[in-house]
Image (cartoon, rainbow, N blue to C red; front, side, top):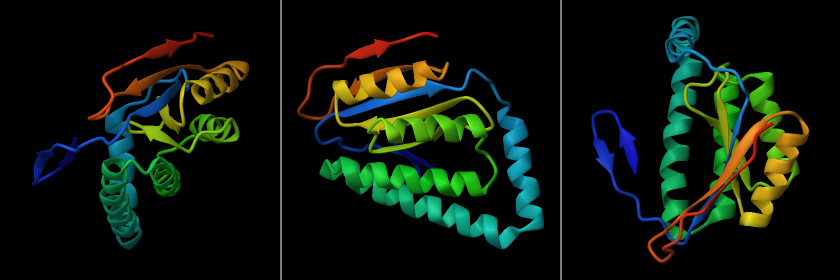
Length: 166
């Protein structure tokens, strides 16, 4: 699904399945603190924040098209671009960047923070369960925790998960 303020929730048809890994930095963050930080940045540099938000809107629209078309490579690239914009808004951290880098180095098609940023978790798109295992192993080797999951599409009836802990 896609949610946009003022437009509500829209369903998205997933063609095929998505295999994802979710990795944790092990540190929680405050959504309020992150929202306040972006609001302060917006006060100081409104043009930069406005361009970043417009870039994110465009990426989300293209990501929806990629999901509906089953274009996993394109979706991964869009995730990476989204992470770059989020980093530019100062909501990423060294640990989030490390998790994203490890995932990409292990073969992820793309990776980005999830949630408000400032800590928390990363989601990485992979090609299948073998790739998920490589990403999770890379995270585990660096002391991070993560799990893999498969989201069934319109033509895929199975949901599977794998999990590791430090």
